Image 1 (cartoon, rainbow, N blue to C red):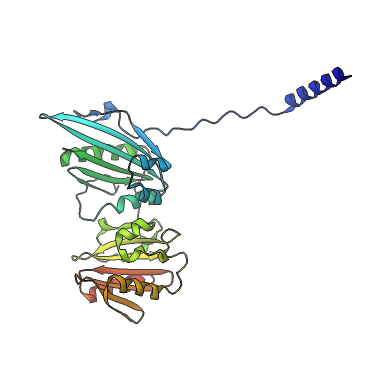
Image 2 (cartoon, rainbow, N blue to C red):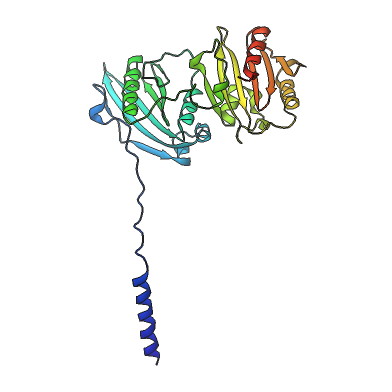
Length: 316
């Protein structure tokens, strides 16, 4: 009897297995095609100094410990690192290429933008925003941010790698981000007298604090949906930070006034505009209109600062 039961159980198990759908094949992790140049693509005299390195997610801490958090706030996905060398006139030149894949083209432009001041030397890269110097260069293309760091290099060394990578990223189908066509907080920046190459996209608490300590307070909610754009204006370089809230913090003007009192002097409120100065004589103005706020500061005269503030908060 027991033998018969075992035979029936085995038969039922075999039938169930036969009726069950075939297991789905295991999915292999897709490794993105490398955007780094191969040895045959390198400029004359340059050779790879080692195999490429790859870091993703929080693995970025293992590559740029101490500077990775701001990349994560711009939705960092991965970075591919290439190292190259060239022996010339008895010395060794070194270049490191970092190709960062960010979440979106906006994120790539953002992490690029906060690393420039405006006025740097630029190359014609078909519309890709960029800057270059003898030992460093950078640009943004689609969702990629490229950083070039050189040692014992010249301006031409970094420029030739910048052009090479610009071509490679364009050939891979990446396009420049059009600030005037793409929706974002920069759309509200007044165009008159703006220094276009100083425009920044501010996302996350660290980038906000980098603009001004005034923006370091938690109530701004830069880690919870608040975004901003900044730019320099006019020959004196006065700075405008245009802030867009998902939800305006309660008692915002009072909170900003408290922060002004902590860092600045001569604070006052007139017609909804908060103003103050710092010890260096720089003026600060703040105003709120709907879900948009503007902060203007710099070594400029008060009338120019007020005019820029008014233009920033006036609906277009």
